[in-house]
Amino acid sequence: AAGLAGSPDVVATVTLSKSLGSQGGAVLGPRRVVRHLVETARTFIFDTGLAPASVGAALGALRLLREEPERAARAREVARRLSAGLTAAGLEASVPDAAVVSVRAPSPEAAVAWARACREAGVAVGCFRPPSVPDRFSRLRLTARGDLTDARIEQAVAVVARCAPRADAPHPVAGN
Image (cartoon, rainbow, N blue to C red; front, side, top):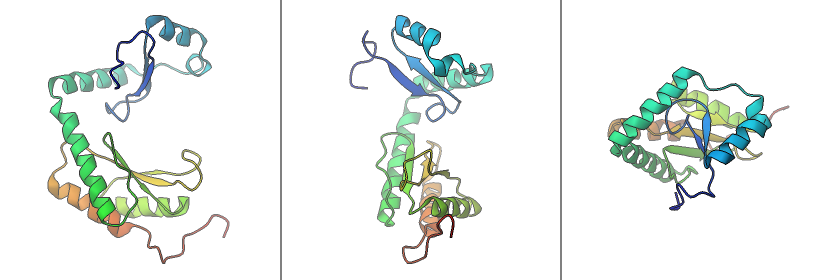
């Protein structure tokens, strides 16, 4: 990313799920470092390898991105448009540097209800709340795709904004 790719002292971790539509992740770096991790890292030793179909899916997606790099650029553009639209609608949306846009929710319970309402209105969103995010940082997550039309982008923004918890509405709190 910072011009360090291929440098002998750089190790990178990458996700295969968000970027390539597969599962799992990978450690990229010098062979000796990767070998050391395979032999000593408890999280690797006590885990199972990726399913061959998942590896094949990730490799296929990587080949496609090499052949058609404009696909990734289009996904980033869709993410920027989603973020701008959500922000213009008064929501606290992240400024993406990739194809994922997150929108802050007022509470874990509100995030769950908001995600459900979006799904019922035809827009699939992820819902992240503690413990997978820090306390007070529950979020919806929208994943941009390069094949989304202008109409679908506008629909997604409209649905997420319409289904958003109102500031004047009480937010459910666990235990009440």
